[in-house]
Image (cartoon, rainbow, N blue to C red):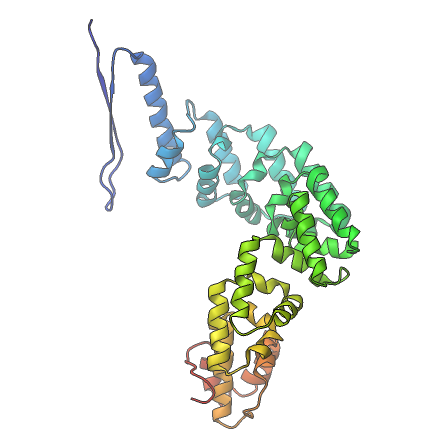
Length: 384
């Protein structure tokens, strides 16, 4: 029996750093030659379109071409045009299509345009919305009428304004796809059962709504642990503690707790520090170690003193702590301030207060404070 073979060659343009990509496929007579050629042509068109119109690199385009097939560019062109006219840059489009390639086949008039207009009506600027949607593809998968609007209407019973809603969405887009009946309502009911006022629930939705999207049993478990630690349900720290504990596993929690205890803290000092600043547990163990080493071995602070001010672990060593210490070092060396300055208080003071008291006040007498404050001077310790 006569066997027919067809060789198909696909060559992409070479770049300075990559060689040409060549695909060779042999088709036997056991396949339908015409159908296979159509398939190959569609795949070639898909790869070409993803590269030229969506800005994808060759490797990503070929990978996505395994999942979708563009037979005609009419609808994809309409989708790309709609995105571009609504402020999406080439980078936004490439990111969006890479993570959500079937978007190219969505109805631009009935499906996409109403969602874009709805989010713009909330107060998103076009540039902010493009950035938001391109990094949160799941939003475009949700039904506007059945999911997005009902969820937002529920949230607004607590946070009231579109401005607050936009703030909440920027903190966690997951809330868009959260089931109101299955997650939001029961989790909020759990907070209320512990006496958390609605005003604090509103703050939680605005500053960190992600914990409210947890499963009911997980949220109840975290809330019970926070309550057992002695947090006051009426305080803001109660919801901050829930936010902190809900994003890490019990194993990760114990690992960080042991890291703090390795500094010489007792269980009581750790609990006291966590109650003072619940977000301290979100700091990486690597950063915790570097900061404590600096506080104890360079600034000669006692670990117990640091435990009384856990907010220090939220500060940047390079951008804030060292430059401020360098400023103090300059001023001490010139006798402009005393050596008994309370370093913890200085590090914790806000930017305006520190600059007014230690930089602008002395910049004429000690011009070096500017370089010190800008991080251009090293710091080895006040006794160096």
